[in-house]
Image 1 (tube, rainbow, N blue to C red):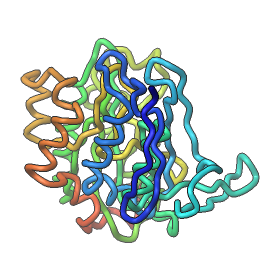
Image 2 (image 1 turned 180 degrees about the vertical axis):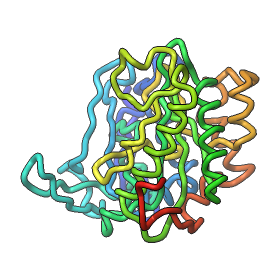
Image 3 (image 1 turned 180 degrees about the horizontal axis):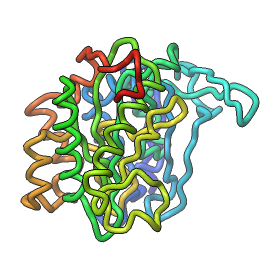
Length: 309
């Protein structure tokens, strides 16, 4: 018998369906458990989604089935789901993005099997103002997460020399993300110049371990620093979002001591470390490690002359 029920979440009525469907077959993790994870992680996740256009990635038949990205907020959405129209040059018309600023919207999205939640670096009202700089680190096999962690530490060191605080999180797959909170006036030209400059400096120092070239055939055994993510049209998976991995993993904030442990290969059981329950335990114990991304105000050095970066 299919499990369906109507629930009330913060005054909104939601009909949840197919709760028994297994979305992560290797772990036996059901849609009901996905919804429950997002309900419990909401206090830490929603602040990172608030006021941002949302791109979702859905697995209606589970992670072993087909998936698809969705920018246009589904037309069958409840009337209380907020949207943000942003013009698409490719489509020649605005796209109505979902905006997830509350728990009912998050539960509704989870019920759609929207396992992954991706956001850009700008609020929808100021699409050309980046609130952070991001370094997306992607290892080319046989390099792995330990190699990414070593590069992340080097990025942090260079940022510290510039007087900038940085934060790390696991992508939830094979890579890492390093964020620099700004929350002040900045342009994408400036943030991209900083990320590109640091990436190319590390590539110049250790060309056998780091690359800024996207071509996969040139990335074997190296960590690719993707500085091009600093663009108004690009998105990155949100902190605390699930990933469409064989077993449920989370794109989880990391302390720098954890990044150092990963680099030393002292932390290797990532299925357990990035599991929904483990991430929830850390968040409930420590709060949102990524809160500085929303609150820290930092000025970019060389902002008046981005090329200097």
